[in-house]
Structures are given as structure tokens and as C-alpha cells.
Image (cartoon, rainbow over all chains, first blue to last red; front, side, top):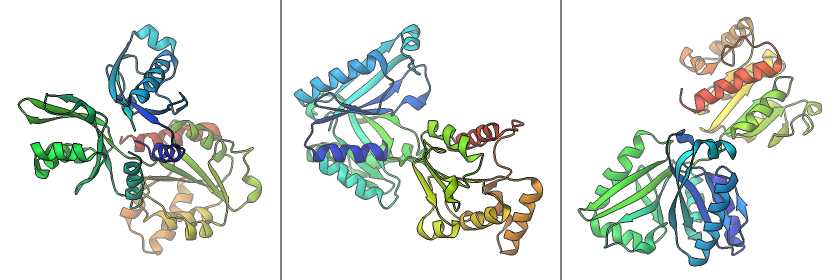
Length: 103
Length: 258
């Protein structure tokens, strides 16, 4: 976790926004560098940071907004074929697990 | 959970190595699913803070602080920089999965000297997740047109800079000033620092000159061995941009532990 994210979380919390933090906890067949990559999502769907962009990030954002409403953290799995991964320019490809943490 | 994050920031002020653990999976009937996503913060000495009292109680119900230490801290201490998933067996029927991750401050790249190599170097390193500071006493050389991706441009005498700034563990220092007397001045100030990387530009003749001066000042061969000089990996670079690539490559190698 980066210190800058921590500072951002505190800043957003001051505005009384409900937040989720999404981060990659497992990435198969890829560089381990991606593990730990994180982004913040607010209850309004605004985001800070990126975990790869493209369609899957959109899925994660929507899921996070839903989970913020429910106030429930959840682990989600996403699998990308190599082609899909290449299409969205995602560095890792393969299967990834993302944890959406309500904070 | 807001207070928990504030506590994290406070703890970071002492530049301790902190690790966060987030509960990412619960396998077992006895632990409430509501605890998913709760976390705690720890360092070498043990657990500092829990985000939830309930998580603390549940963990204590199953294990002693010593067990938590041996299951969590030991593997983490071995390699402090990487994030990892870690399963903890509470008993036969209950397992927890935690995501362990160090809290990191973005590394800082400090470039001493705003000359012709600094320009491409700052450009390249801004792609590599550094917070970048350029220091030079020549104000004319320091502007955001030349360094659009720098985070901080400081028009200061080098001595002045060191009077106000503490070099930290997560700093990467590139010494490319306009003359060896300035390189010497900067190196003398940082050679004993905790910086993760110190590189200095120069021909072997110039480097020898600077090193000899430092030896006269009482610095040891061991101190000098910490310095990468000539700076950059050897790719036979010639132009400023090529030299910048060689320097950036050396910095990446150090950062990634090669």
C-alpha cells in the first residue's frame, strides 16, 4: 500500500465519502509486480489510481459501488484470455483475483 | 475505519517498516463473514493496531500473540518488500487468508544538477513511479518547461539544500552537476546517508580526483564503494538521452534488488 493512497483515503474520508479500495491479490502467469496494485472507488463511482484499465476495471468499479451500498467486502475473480488482455493493454492477463475492501 | 488509517500515517512518521494485513478469505463456520476486509497493522515488534475489535478478539480466541508472530511475522521479515497472500490455520476447521503488504513511501529521485542529462533523465524516471526533485543553484536552468514531469524544482546552493533536507532510505540520488567541485560537495554530504542509490557522473580521471579528496576528508574505501561511478549501466551510451537511459536502468536494477 502506498503512502499516497493513505493520504488520499484520509482526504476523502474527511468529505464523508463512502469508499472502497480494490487491489490485486493474486495474478497467475504474470509478473508479481501487479500484485498489490490498487485503486480507490467512491460511492459516486469516482476512482483514484488504476489497476489496469479497460473493461475489467469498469467491472470492478461497478462492483465496488454496489458493495459500498451493501457495506460488504468481497473477493472477485476475473479471467482474461491472452487476446482480451492484449486488447485492453492489461499487462498481466490470465486470471487475477481482486479484493474489494470497504473502508 | 478512518481512525485506523490515521493511525497508519502517524506510525509512518517514525519511518518504521509497517505491514498491513487484510482479511481476504474466511474458511470456517465460527468466524463471522462480516470480518472480511477488516485489517491490522504490524511491524517487527508485533501488532500495532486492529481496524476492528472483533477481529482482535477472534484472533486472540484462537491463538496467542506469539503464534500470530510466528505465523505472520517470520515469513514477512525474510522479504519485506513484496506483497503476499498468507493462510493462517486457526484450528482444523478454521482458516483465514490474509493479504500482507508493506506500506511504502514512493521513492524519491533527487537529481543534483539541471544540465543536459537531467532533462531526459527526469522524463524517463517520471514513467518509473518516482517522485522527482531537481536541485541546481542556477535558477535559469530550473523551470517546468524544461522539466514538465518533475515534482519539485529547487533553486538552491547545494549546501543550502542539505541544511534543510534529510536523505532517507527510500531516496535515489543522481549527481550530475556542472563541475567536479560541485559533485564533490554533493557527494561529501550524501556518502554516509541511508540513500538506496548514489550515482555520480564523470570520466575516470574526474572520479579519481573527487575520490582522492574524499579520502583526504577521512572517508573509507567502503564508503566510496557505495557510489556508482561512472554512473549508469554500460550500454555504450553517447547522447544525453542514451546516458539517461543507462542511469535509469541502473536505478531500476537497484530498486528491484538485482
